[in-house]
Image (cartoon, rainbow, N blue to C red):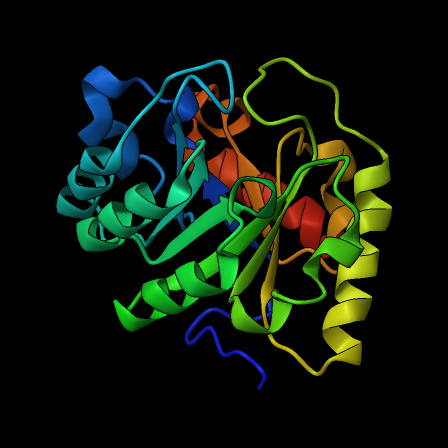
Length: 229
């Protein structure tokens, strides 16, 4: 059965600034500065599945109190089930977990949907698109990693563009309606190419929060993506 992700659509490219690059001591101000974006992207890392330790579901709750933007929560953890449910209870609209880390992916997508959250599945760079075959119709978004998860300062993996194309072709062939998100290494240089082959959501961290004018940064990234379409 084709999925439906509600008010989000494929009509324009959506921008999701990652608060991993924000000043957490000024989280309220930082979130207000990105009000022209479409999502707040929250990376949850456990220091085990990936080497860094970051936020938990409490940050999702804090973001929801400060901003009306929906929260897109990306889990990079050994056991995503309990944290996914906590993020759901905290108010995340989308919760993405890595297929490589969750042997009970079908069950988790069902639990998330029953709680009113839109489930999403994430793929590491080395994970083939074929890994989606048995789960893709149960999710509202597929997250394609443009870099290895959990490591900063990496170059964008060029193969990501072709991977997005393959996933978009799978979406069309199966008559599905999930969003395709690209996370890691997104820039003005590759935004157009990614949107051209089917990307709907672009995650950007330092590109947005490192800019003096966040609204301008968001607009320029969206513009580069739309030009590619």
